[in-house]
Image (cartoon, rainbow, N blue to C red; front, side):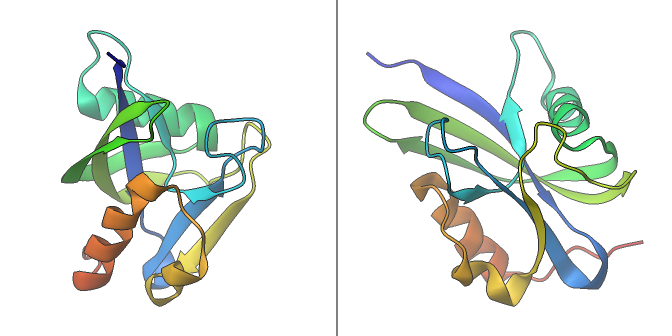
Amino acid sequence: MKKMVHVMVGVIWGEEQQILLAKRPEHLHQGGLWEFPGGKLEAGEEALSGLSRELQEELDIEVLEASPLMDVKHDYGDKQVFLDIWQVSRFKGEARGVEGQLLRWVPLAELDQYEFPAANATIVERLKSEKAPSLL
């Protein structure tokens, strides 16, 4: 039986109702596709702590305010993932691709123009059906 990988995912809202996307490096699982930033939750780590740590490591930002959005379980055949998805409505710092990954701020209405891993399709549909959180 395949192990389920618990992944913390941040839907990061910026100014003008734009969402931050990152492009997965070609050599990784689902490489070359766009994703909502995040990474694996470590053993014994609280969800919000894991999300904050991952976004600090990957994007050099500090999460100030985040709330749970949804969970998604997906089986890729070679790997199973449990996506623990949070909306990040406030953060400190300017997001940059610490690991060399390409970043792009995308208007909600243009998410369909990007190719995501299959597990992310549900997130895109959910975001399009809801309004962005109020940003302070």
